[in-house]
Length: 200
Image (cartoon, rainbow, N blue to C red; front, side):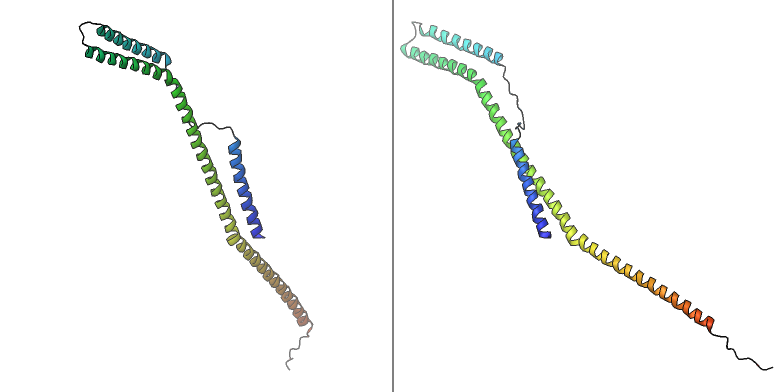
């Protein structure tokens, strides 16, 4: 009987844990950390325009130098390479600044997904830990009841029954003694006074 109750209780605890986990999964998920990453696009565009203008200005200056008739062919080739490098730098800078908002958005989404995964793991582990603690406490209380309190209760019931039986026996004995004393008194009252008379 005890084993059946214990098995039933353990099954109920396990089912409650699984129901808690299922309800946790069905709840709408909120990220553990909500990061609002914003970018000052106006300032970035202004910086991009200034950088592009500066690089174009450098490129124009170098082109003007290349058109100088006093330069040798080697110097012109070196300046052409420098101009190409400046133009590539201008293009790369512009593309990087244009792609920065998309990169920032991707980073924000990835960060939210990571924080949500962390939150899910923490909540699941917390639910499992609390369920285990509750099961341990209930099993401990059940063990204390079955191993200590119930035998003590049975002992107390037996002792109380014995004391009650003793009290009844004492009461019966007292009543019997009372009846015996009353009968003895009646007998004594009926016996004639047989004291010897003295001769005068």
